[in-house]
Length: 175
Length: 393
Image (cartoon, rainbow over the protein chains, first blue to last red):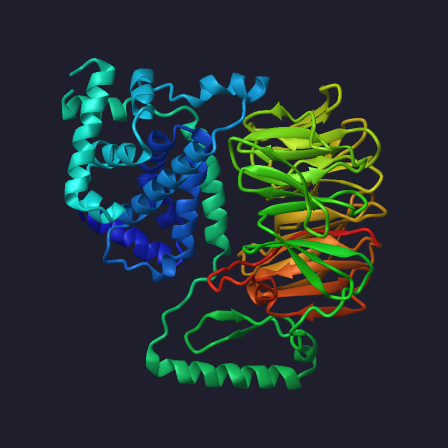
């Protein structure tokens, strides 16, 4: 059975009430989804909330889920769109200066395994540009699929990818 | 930059805290999955049959003595149990059986319910808590902690970087503890002096010890419980229950004893620091609440297979465990009335609230369609309301 077949079987099992199948789906998708959210919002707590809410939404709508469709794109659509919304809202309402504890937390909130330069460079992009970069180069969606997930024309996706790549290359000195 | 290089950079190393986040999220997701009501997909030709059998089952149960009081579930033609709840539940909450006011949160926001059943929607809020005398309430509104009057007037707000949850107002009235993301924070009752107390805490609500001192118990990320004086930051006790994640914390009325709920049971922490476990006899703990007087704890627990819920009264002194009410499906939480005579049990699977006279279940009253009663104007809102407290008779 291929990966898609296994995933369909997990969805079927979860719909039938088998927690082990839901756990298999969770383990397969949690980390990429969390990382995608993190790379868009740059806030570990927010990424955790967004990813967790997406899985809770999956649980709530499990019975209505069309098991012929792949689970990943459905989950990623929720995660990335919510991450964009969160990042936009954050940009619209900058935080007030935090207290000592919040500052002390800041180093933990950067992604220690990720290149700090990459994280800083991504931060310079808009949430929409970060999202297409993450969908393309982390989650491996094609520009057509990204267009469907974000409800964007393919040309817009391509231009955002190009601009995003150029900006990252310039910022990272790898042009 | 090449596409290959970018792929490598995006996939390098885990984001900080990924493992802990994954573990926390799985606990929440698994719990939600365990609580869901699987919806069978009945074929069209069995729907009429299912309806007929359901009607017959209701009639049969109603005319038999045991079924005339509580009819908690029926089995339909597609073989699944349907939770019905208490028979003859009232369609509207017309009055509370004891003095005081309820604080409720639903997808449409926070509500105050008066003793005569009238209620007021105060606006958006996910979690909320009464101040000790019911003069104010504190609510989590997205990434803000908000203090409101019961009339809905905002007195102050504190913005945070992460979602605010589980505010708890200290019995003195001068402090509020709450979670902002995974940070436990404390602020003064007037919204000043907000500060972080601990990081990396799970989403278990903290619990203030009754009394004038600002002593707070909270769960930590390593599965233990810490008791601190929040004014001096002095750690008064550390306990490791050892029964999995801490689900709930409560102090008995006089503040002498701290109770810690996990899935295996209740661990009692005595004043001198000694601990002992009270078993739930095979049941799984969900949440609990300490009686406003005396030492009793009312526990929501599930049967071993999870198909039924029970309300169990525990008496830490004697170790007595007594079931006072049970039903099919899920009870989500309970609260005591301010006079300690009634328990309000949230029967989420039946969409009912059940008021149980706590002593010997001498009386029982139920209200149905609770979700509808706390639905705002937006038709798409869905979700069973949470009870923030029953205050101040």
